Structure formats: C-alpha cells, structure tokens
Amino acid sequence: MNNTNSIREYQRAVKSIPGGVNSPVRAFKSVGMPPVLIDRAKGSKIWDIDGNEYIDFVSSWGPMILGHAREEIVEAIRKTAEKGTSFGAPTMLETQMAELIVEMMPSVESVRMVNSGTEATMSALRLARGFTKRDKVIKFAGNYHGHADSFLINAGSGAMTFGVPNSPGVTKATAADTLVAPYNDLQAVADLFTAHADEIAAVIVEPAAANMGLVLPQEGFLQGLRELTQKHGALLIFDEVITGFRLARGGAQELYGIMPDLTTMGKIIGGGLPVGAYGGRKDIMEKLAPAGPVYQAGTLSGNPLAMAAGITALTILNENHEIYSALDKKGQQLAAGFRKNIAETGVKAIVNQLGSLLTVFFTNADQVTSYQEAAQCDTEQFARYFKLSLENGIYLAPSQFECAFVSEAHSEDDLNKTIAANRSALQQLTDL
Ligand code: HOZ
Image 1 (cartoon, helix red, strand yellow):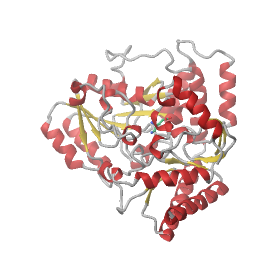
Image 2: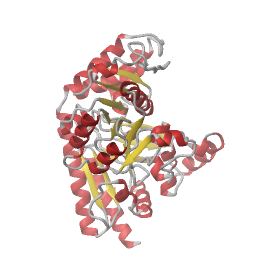
Image 3: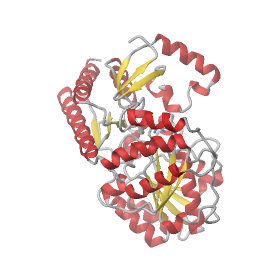
C-alpha cells in the first residue's frame, strides 16, 4: 500500500495542529501507524490522498447512514447555501427539523438544536440539574458522552484508546459530582442511589454502548434504570448520538421500548454536517431559556445548511422504513461471516453486533458486556488486524474500542469483499 502522500501531509499537519488531527482517534496512534488523509468519498467508498480506495466502515463515526455524498443531501445543501449560510435568527427549517425529530423519536416532545453531540450532552445535564435542583450524575464506565468535563470520567472512545479515562484538566469538584457504575450492573446503580439519596439529578446511558466497541444492554438493564430513576426522582437520559435514527427510526428507545426523560442526539440528524440536539418531556424542556431559567445558546445552532442536510436524511429514513430491516440484514451477514472466519482460523475473537453496528473484539473471553471486559482485549492483535484490513481495502475505525458502521450504501459485493478481507486478515494473524 502506497501512503507516501499521507505520511508527508501528516508530518506537515503535526507542525500546526496538536497531534496533527482535530479529534484524537483519527491519529491512528493506537494502531501504531500514521493516519491516511482522506481526499473524497462516495456511497460506501472512501479514497485517500494517495488514491487508495477503501470500503468505508467508519462512516464519519455514524452520520453517513445513507452513504457518502448522497445526491439528495448534496443538492439540499447546495440549494440552501445559495440563500445564505447563517443568519443567527429563526428559520422555518428549524421548526421542520424539530417536527421531524418529535415525530420519529418516541419520547421527544420538544427539542433544542446545538452543534455537536458534546454540546447536546453537556446541555442536557445542565437542564437535568436545573430541573431537579440536584447536582450529581451517574454515568457508566466505558460510556462516552463527548468531551465535557462531567463526562470525562471513566470515559470510552478516544479516552479509552489513549489510556486517559480521566482527563487532566477536569477539576476535582466536577469529578466528585460524577458517579460511575459498571455498564449492565443495576445493583451498582441502586447502591449509588442509596448512598446519595436526593442528590442525583440524572442517570445518563448509551442505551447500546458503542464507544468501548459495541456492548449491548443485558435483558432488563434499561428497564431497571427507568424504574430506579423514577423511584428516586432522577431523570433518565438516553445518549442516542450514535444509536438514534440508526438502530431503528426512533433509535434504541423504540427498539427496546423504554421512554427516557431526555434524549441526546447528533450525527445522523446533520446528514454529515456538524449538529447535535437534545429533547424530551415538554415540562422539562420548557425550563430552557427563553421559556425558562436554564441558559443555553449558540450562534450557529440550527444552522440552515445543517438543517437542510439533516431534514433530507431524516425524511429519507422516515419514509423508507425498509432501510432498517436491510441494515439489520447487512449487519447480521457481516457478523455471521466474521464468526465463521474466526471459528475456522482459530483466532481468539468474538463479534458483538446489533443492527448496523458491530465490533470484532480480540479476546479470550466468550463475551464482552462491560468496560472491564472490553479493556482486557488484545489491542496489539487489533492493531495488526486493522493494518491488514486497510491493506486489503477495508477502512475500519482505528481502535479496538469503536464500532463498524454499516450504511445503506454497502452493497452485497462490498459485504462479500469485507468478509473475504476479514478471512485473509485473520488467516495472516495465525501465520504471524
Ligand atoms: N468520538 C468519535 C469516536 N467515538 C470520534 C470522532 C472523530 O474523530 O471524528
């Protein structure tokens, strides 16, 4: 694989950008090679600046559920841009977006647009604190809710990859208000409620955890959280930045039939442009300024280009429910192919899959259900697998603790090539 241009341009980037990237995981640090720089993408394919073509399973970390540069979305952005790109004033596009989200996401009655998932989660937490007049929050080890201070405690995603689950710069006072429980451990949550009676504003959870690799909620876990929060007067926040509009039209809450009080969203709702949103029960959302006293604002919130791209993406998903069964089938096909390859090559690995999300964990264990189990995976083996996959034309997330994202654009041919590349990579791992 020729990556001369990527190496040269990365070295150049490092001189003016910390670590050469604008988001840590992109630096390929945990797989021990310089990153490839991307030139363009279309449908299921992505091309680097050396002209190498890959089948893309990063999908911009989730937004590109309909594939890259989808014609309707590009056209919506083009048309909207011609009318001006930002006004800092209300537009009808924002109402249209809000109405679509309210229609699609079961528990959302009212919604506020922001610019990223991080902004959505930090604002939702402030709102939960303002509403309940309590300070503490329970989060789960290995769940990632963006990089706001309150959530960078035992966080997943890049934080896990870089071995800094608790970031320097988060004050002791902030950390003291964040209580951490193991994922899938209801008893631990019950114990925290007992120890901190009347202090806990909210429990925030990824309803399917997708930032420590994919870790699924066990039977009764989400329902148990719903009951515990109700019993103790705390709010339940589902972080659906990844799962929203992906696992089902109405996200994980529709799939599992649980109604949280607040939901954070992002990624797919921007159609590939920067966006985030949080919404939920109207009586809670009405506490937000200017309707209520909890302050939150943003110059580019509800940006017309992001709204136009997002409305187009959501409308396609809303009007074509069969997309979800097709995505499920593709996810299952990949998982079945990978599992067969694992069994036949004898590599120590397991596959977690749900709909269009999946992770191959390199582990001796027979399940990964928590941060602790995920953290025991063989990251060096993953790094070798990643490089072999890249050389075979498959662009995966460069970390053991992320997911593969399947999109509507992945064809039968893409899936077959991916399963074959997985087979070849696993075979080579056994030969090493
Ligand atoms: N937080 C993302 C992974 N879960 C990474 C975003 C990016 O680097 O683009």
